[in-house]
Length: 388
Image 1: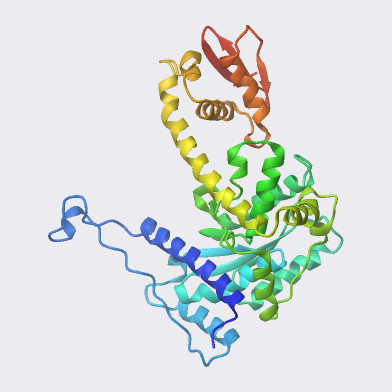
Image 2: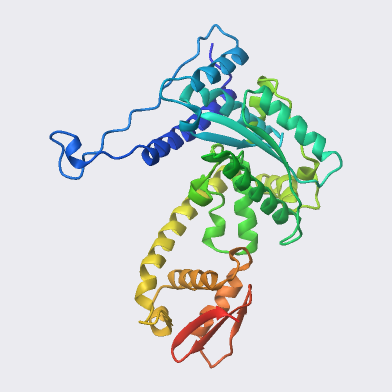
């Protein structure tokens, strides 16, 4: 008999991501043969095809825990699959149901595909005993067969509010761990429910279509962050933990009404479902994907149009900017502000709207002050954005 449907779902989601990572890894590490290396190949197509990664399916009669450890050892000694040649994938695990389900699926699937699998848990230091809890999570990850496993303590600042500051500290720690271990990617346990919450938060901020696109399945420098569970709901992850007898820890901050996301999760979304009926979460997640597709297309258009609105000295020409659609023009303005030194996380729609008025509503107004001590002003038909 196969695994429970919830377990099968989380494993399939992780397997797909690992296959993507393996394909990218082979593409990036396999040298391309010269064009003449393949007899009869058309000019420019001589690279040898990359063979699929080896797959070793463990015998069904062996208990799961034994199968997993045996598979890990077999992967380490597989011919041509030396440890340093195989990609390392880390899972970010808080000990909650989503990330524990993700860790268990990674531990099960990675050895079968010849991928090294490790884990990292971040101690934010925001609650008494958080260091001990982080060590407990690290122990659970080791028991799953993950290696290397790390518990990393961080100091959470105050910039942007408590939730944003904790997120910044966490991602900084994950980046450092990935570099330290030479990893390829970090898996994150965000679910479809998290995506729906992110879309609603973006809607409340009025930050535009990019904000409505929520979290990307692939993000970060070099695509280092992967979110396998964006198409799965939170209950599936929790059910997978339950049927596998995986202990989970429920962060009390997730139920604390002092936090915006917590209020949205426990009050806002249930109220929407009561008013609009079931299916709100799925609809919001679908909105995120559609918005992301549109935003990506507009970003591409803006990148292509930017060169045409700059003069020989590289300054933005207001008349040419005015002729562009607002969505394209404002993207160019945002990119210019960031390049001048404005922090992307502090640059909001209202800032770009003010700069845009220098083009569309010019009445001799003065300079616009932007975050990061960046100043935007109109001079002789040109838009100058620079450090003040």
